Structures are given as C-alpha cells and as structure tokens.
Amino acid sequence: MLRITFLGTGGTLPTINRNPSAIFINREGETMLFDCGEGTQQQMMRAKTGMKISSIFITHFHADHFLGIPGLIQTMSFNGRTEPLDIYGTERTKQMVKLMIELGYYKLGFEINAHELEDGDIVDKGEYFIKAVATDHGVLSLGYILEEKSRAGRFNREKAIELGVPVGHMFSKLQKGETITVNRRRIKPSQVIGEARPGRKVVYSGDTRPCESIERESAGADLLIHDGTFADELRDWALETKHSTTAEAAQLAKKANVKQLILTHFSSRYSENAEPLLLDAKGIFENVKLAQELMEIEIQLRDK
Ligand SMILES: [Zn+2]
Ligand SMILES: [Zn+2]
Image (cartoon, rainbow, N blue to C red; front, side, top):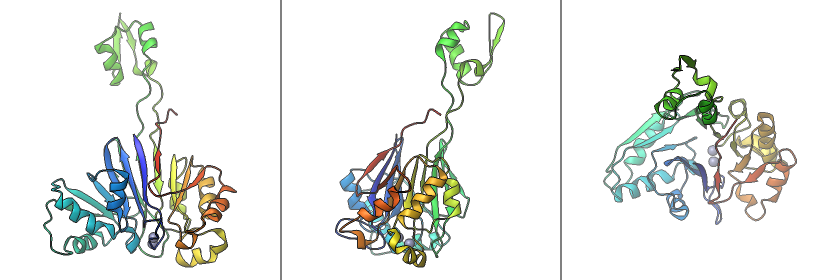
C-alpha cells in the first residue's frame, strides 16, 4: 500500500474550507507526515489516520508548514506515546524542534530526534528512501522524494517446472539469487526470474518557484504534488512571493513526464472559485487534479 491523504491544502492562511499544508503518507503500514500546519491533528482524526507516525518531514519554517507540531506532540504525550519521533527539515530544525518541545507545561513522554538535511541527503528506510532536495522559495527550503527501491522480478513458476526444478526449497534458492544444479544441469536465477520491477515514486515540492531540482527528481514519478498557489494571471505575484502558478507546475510536470500531478497550497483568494487554477493547468497537462481536504490517492505497484 502507498496511500497519500491530503490533510491541508490551503496556502499561507487557513480558510474555512482549507487547512494549512499537511500530507499524510502510509506506506505498507508505516506512516509519516510531510509538513504539519496548524490543525493537522484534527484533520488526522477526521481522516482516521491514527497518530502512530514515525516521522515528520518539514519543507520549510514558514508558519503554515509547521505550527501543527507543538499541538500534535502534546496530544501524543497525553495519549501515552512512548515510541520515538523523528523530525526532519532544513538547517535550524534542531533549534525549531527545541523551541516547540519547550512550549508550555506538559510532560513529553517520548523522544524526539531532530535531523537537519541538505540538498541531496537521503534518509534510508530499507525498502525505500526519502531524498531531500533544495528548492527555490526565498528561505531555506526542501522538497522531498519518496522512492521505493526496485523489487525482484517475477518468478516464473511454470518455466522452473519445465526446466525440471522440483517444487520446494530449490525454488526459494533460485528466488534468493542462487544458481542450482538439477540432474547435473546448472540453472541460473535469470532463467526463471524476470527483470527487476521499479518501485513507486512520489515527489512533494513544498512551496517553491518551478525549479530544476524538482523537475529532475520528478522524472517518471507516479505522482508529483506541486505548489500551485496562484492562477496564471498572477504570475508576477508568484514570482515576487516565490510560489508557482498552476500553469508553471503543469509545464514542469509535462517536462518531467510524471504520471499524475496534484496541485496544492492554494491562495485564499480562490476559496470561492478554484476553477481558474485547474483550467490553466489542464490546458498544459491532462492528468492533473486540485488537492481537496481529506482526499486520498492510492499509488499502485508498478510492473515495469
Ligand atoms: Zn506555505
Ligand atoms: Zn512558504
């Protein structure tokens, strides 16, 4: 399972209908947050995600991306959490986390480990990794790439039987990559195992101008979640505030040949009518959606 739940899709300021940035990802039962704006914990309750997250990845320290952390950790403590929590972000993350931990009277019942990442740093999680890349937002900022390592190719059972391999432990030897001998014939794993299957890739830009690092890392991604703060009529304002228009994000998605684009972080000026945001992008890249509060997206395993 690789499921993405949008908990906050508004830009800069919360509105009645949109919370500030937060994205929840569940990968095979391990759960994590990317950004944690104010009110994220109530959105987690509404989405029934549970609070057993292992880590929080913060793109940058503008208030709409991290103010939800103090409340969330206080609730976790109140609920008796004992498992450690990792918080990742740019330089200054240690200082920010220290301030958040010391905010108010409460008893922190678990360990919080702050990690500072730089452009190109990788957090290895075994079957997958998270890579941080520098983005272009006028303050220290990172985008994140969650990418699975490739899986072993498909085992061709019929072929193995045809080659005279007895069903049982010889099968598992081949699956582990060992060459076996059957009736004095050597059988190599490559004879019965297909090509390695690529893992899934999800990219989250955070707040940024369209930038080379996100375009490069998004190549062939299953899903790109990109800053789409403004419609194209406000391109100048996007430049000024170091955000992207939805048309710019769509152009980047097209160049990177991603499978799907989801835009988020919409300016409150579109709270009545978000249509211009979508129309501008659709004209450039067909498979695009505007993120909605509590929207869920499931990414299927790839065969090729
Ligand atoms: Zn923001
Ligand atoms: Zn920002």
